[in-house]
Length: 178
Image 1 (cartoon, one colour):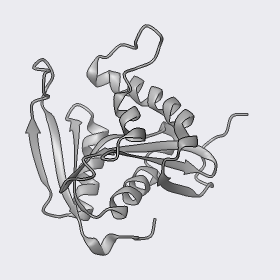
Image 2 (tube, one colour):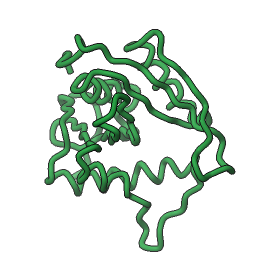
Image 3 (cartoon, helix red, strand yellow):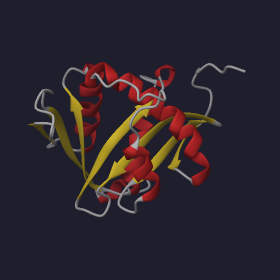
Image 4 (spheres, helix red, strand yellow):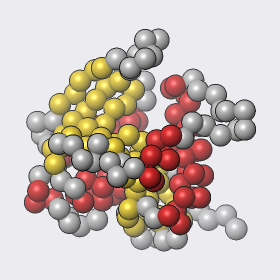
């Protein structure tokens, strides 16, 4: 049975559990396919995409995976790394198309960053206009003094630089309404 997004299901943001591996892997394929618009990456011979970030987020103590659900429907994820450093990094962030521009992405990010207030950073490509708008908006909401910096992509001189936005989430945001 196919379900349509109409915003009627409660949004739940939570750390991923072992039982979330399959839905995360399926969402990951959609995410990587969508990102291929900017990266030019082709699927591997078996039809999958590189997934080391997803695997690390489920196995490494310095990484974390978060799942966004609408009721019992998985609709997004956030992968983070450097969780044991002063600046935590959002390394992958995804919400399915029907749930975009309805507050789902903002709810997902809020759930992640308020669980661990402090300094956060994320990279995106300027060509991804929707990502540029989203990350600038949420960084401004948390930190009016956020920073933007363009950095070359390591080992990929043919790619345009990533735009890194860094923002601080104050400790009083911990446990904010999600």
